[in-house]
Image 1 (cartoon, rainbow, N blue to C red):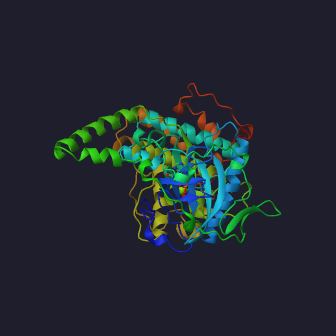
Image 2 (tube, rainbow, N blue to C red):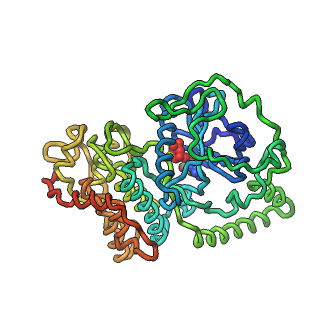
Image 3 (cartoon, rainbow, N blue to C red):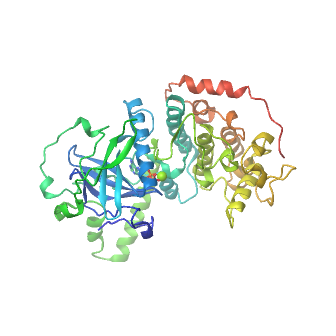
Amino acid sequence: MDRGKGEEGSENYVEGGYHPVNRGDLLNEERYVVQSKLGWGGFSTVWLAWDTQLNKYVALKISRSKDYFRETALREIETLKVISEADPDDKECVVKLLDYFMHSGPNGNHVCLVLELLGDNLRTLLKHYSGKGIPLNKVKEICFHILRGLDFLHGKLSIVHTDLKPENILLLSTIDPKKDPKKLGVPLIPSSNKGKSIIATSSSSGSNICKKGNQQIRSNQKGKLVAQDCGTAANEEEEKLGVEAQTRTWGNEKILSGAWEGNLAQRIRELNINSLSEKQNSMSSLDLKCKIGDMGNARWLPIDKMGPIQTHRYKCPETLLGSSFSTPADIWSVGCIAFELATGDFLFSHRAKNNQEKLVNHLGLMIELLGVMPWGVATGGKVSRDLFDNKGNVKGYRKCGRKLIDLLRDKFGYAKKNADDFRDFLVPLLHFVPEKRPTAMQALLHPWLGGGPRLLQPSSSAAQTQQNAEVIPEEKTAV
Ligand code: ADP
Ligand code: MG
């Protein structure tokens, strides 16, 4: 059985934590049949499931059940509903919500999001290149899609993602075509669901009441989504239907059972050679279209509550220093992601024994790589005093980095032109002054991305924000 409890840690499969999922589990009145695990994050596990009503694969994001996670998931639903309404033609490179419901299990009541099925995340893509980085032409293609999604979120919807990182950006397809669910054959379907007629319901997107479990998702008077007890207390575990073993045709199970017959060593060699050349072929023809996922931490402008945002290595200076943030925080993260995709290394990579050292090293590296930090930025945050001395030096930082261009040329061996061009794209994204970073639309128009045949429809509000940003005068510098 494909129960959870993988990398996400069995200690999190406790009350308030992840829901234990098995292959063949039926959710939401037996509509969704779990097939296998797609991924996980700090807030949820995500599963490939078969939608027996619409006869298609979907991704089920099952949140941890503690209040904090449940509320985050409800906010994610609200955000995704707005996104779906604003992008009916699905052109904007952001993941789409299809449905949602509550599911009750041994660890509590879980909010479940039914998402369109996407492919591998960019962390997995990086692993396929053995951590050595992705060819620059491919990085350009990926950056184009991320920026396109951001232009829509920032420019059209005034949403800041706040957690951009490779794990949260998803290719539309699987890297290994053999793992593409559409090619895996017949999905696992319980016998009683087989032959069920296809009923396309309009409630499949945007329904505001779930039908089952101890709790329902309802809109309260203010139109906000809340999880409410509904008293039906039906335990889905007790109601699981039998599963037809013969229909299990996915994964490598079948292929492997044949492979172990005959000369084992020879067979393994052949498999390795085949998979290597197949891998190379599939990588060169890989479809690099991708979408921004994980809207769980998204914030709406104007941001009323600041609080911590972003995952450590993708944090912008304003977040590190405890200043206010807005859409440019995401742009900074795009710079970090672009560098990482190209080189296979984190842009800000360092070791630290504790949180203070982490902050010190991160800031010190930023300054070494990107140059002097404007005084206003350095001194403007809640924790600025703890990190800078009164000469503007990062307290206790021992020099260990180098300039971005030297890093690209010496460490990663880019030819001069490639290094210069890539640096020219990256440096504005990583401007210390948030308002001076380009908007997503402006970054899309950067020559490094090549323009090419991809037609863009600029969002006027994005262009406007930047015009305002450009009149801000250069500030006194800290170092
Ligand atoms: P969390 O909020 O817990 O971080 P994410 O939304 O980031 O959850 O999803 C965790 C992982 O699950 C992703 O990194 C990705 O690998 C996988 N995943 C998420 N959504 C989808 C989807 N729609 N299709 C395919 N895989 C997905
Ligand atoms: Mg995530």
